[in-house]
Length: 122
Image (cartoon, rainbow, N blue to C red; front, side):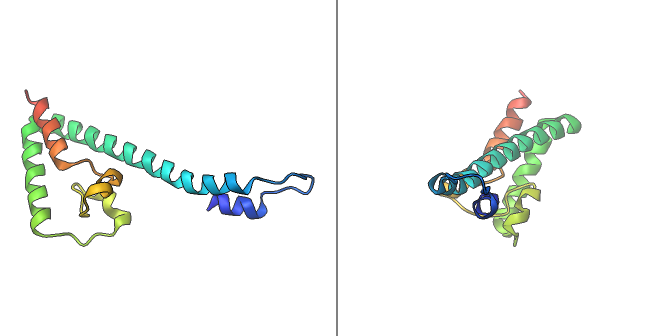
């Protein structure tokens, strides 16, 4: 959105050359993808940090890994009707999707979270 408005109102009267529309178009395409990648990376690292903190509070990481297994099982049996804009607020990923969609998921795979928690208890 910012690039679009910059293309419309971003030029100056004394600027004879003007902007490069091809560069602006590339930025309009690459910018949101880069922002999404950063958002996903931050969200996943926060999820792992929250799991580690929860395991410390519980006293035993296996308690939390067991709870994650039960939540994952329940979410598979009873699908959640969730808006993609609020999916980051769920403990387990409420959206189903495979393949390339998993790369852009804000939640790390539940199996990876469980494996990390169980490796903490060793």
